[in-house]
Amino acid sequence: MFNILKNIFSNDIGIDLGTMNTLVCTADRGVVINEPSVVSVNTETNNVMAVGLEAKRMLGRTPGNIRAVRPVRDGVIADQAITEEMLRYFISKATGRFKIMQPRVLVAVPSGITDIEIRAVRDSALKAGARDVRLVEEPLASAIGVELPVEEPTGSMIVDIGGGTTEVAIISLATIVHSESESCAGDAMDEAIIQHMKQAHNLLIGERMAEDIKIEIGSAYEMEQVKSKQVRGRDMGQHGSSLPRTVTVTSDEIRHALEAPVSRIVGAVRKTLDNCKPELSADLIDNGITLAGGGALLKGLDRLLSEETGLSVTVAKEPLLAVVHGTGVMIQQTQHSVFDHPQNTLIGRGNRSA
Image 1: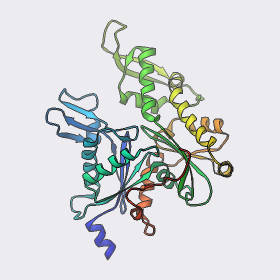
Image 2 (image 1 turned 30 degrees about the vertical axis):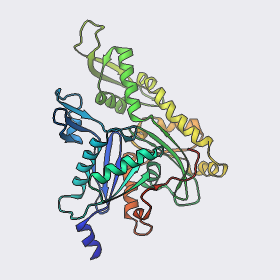
Image 3 (image 1 turned 180 degrees about the horizontal axis):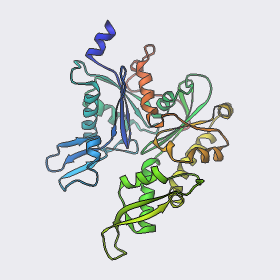
Image 4 (image 1 turned 180 degrees about the vertical axis):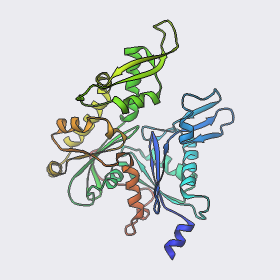
């Protein structure tokens, strides 16, 4: 009866505050929100016009007085005021109108986050309507979400490739022992494709088109069958106009365009392994590496990493939901509640090389 009354009055929620998407789960309903981290603002009145899916539809299509922005960049808050409005919208949508008490919130943040950035996330969530806020490092939440044995005295390795950052971590006894946070992930891949289209085809494309190219024909490893895609954009003037134009690109040229960001991700994995203690390295021979996050879906990335490291590499079943699933598991724990941790403690942070 107490639990029923508690859920009527309040609800604990977990938030994966990502550069590309924000996902929210509740203790009783699981994942309830998966929307773009985009806010459209009227520049004349500073009023928020739309958040999430509706705001993303406005990207590149807004009139002069409406600006569609991403308030989170490289996994951290770039615009605190707009982030507060975005979180307020998502928290309200997740908890419903009839909750009397404000919810307790667990937010996943990058492992390389600074103390100032930690304070910004916590303050934004409190101002957005949370009554209590705890923060957890994304690699730990992701590892929990894909059901790695993080509490055991054995090394588990997670590589979470999001929109703004790639989080690489080796975890043992529920603590991140070694980690690297590389500001190169899905956004960097999209930008590499945009630059390639400019340089190779004199074609200007937007973020959405670049993302479509990456998803449909992008790869990190040579594919058995070469694929192609028609790409629409604006001629940059070499052909005598700035009119819309269509070109055909192949999976091979997009793979070459993605070599720089993919190499940075591989480098972060190798650097983490180089800093790993011998005992944990031995564990990884048996346990391998698990990939999570949207970037894990890049074709052939698992095969490339396996060749580069000599370890088995597995893509999580639901890589896009790994972090938010992890926060859901943590807020559901009845013993050793995540909200028992001190407010100034970043859950998962331990004494490590990064």
